[in-house]
Length: 50
Image (cartoon, rainbow, N blue to C red; front, side):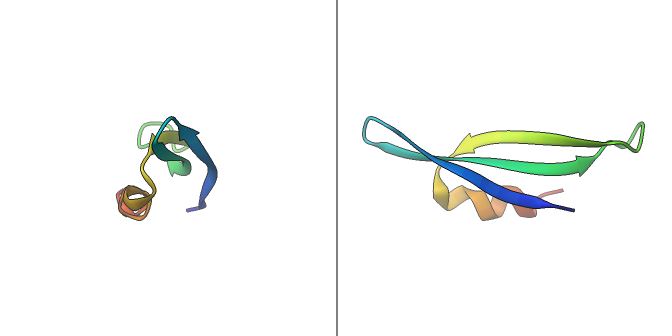
């Protein structure tokens, strides 16, 4: 499973990170990309979830 953190975003006083994860669809078996914007501390936890 490929995964990577793409960009650092700054909005006002908050620092955010956009993370993209490639996951396999359970219905079709095709790969799809899931994106999320979160704080940098939460990225590793989010990427390790299935």
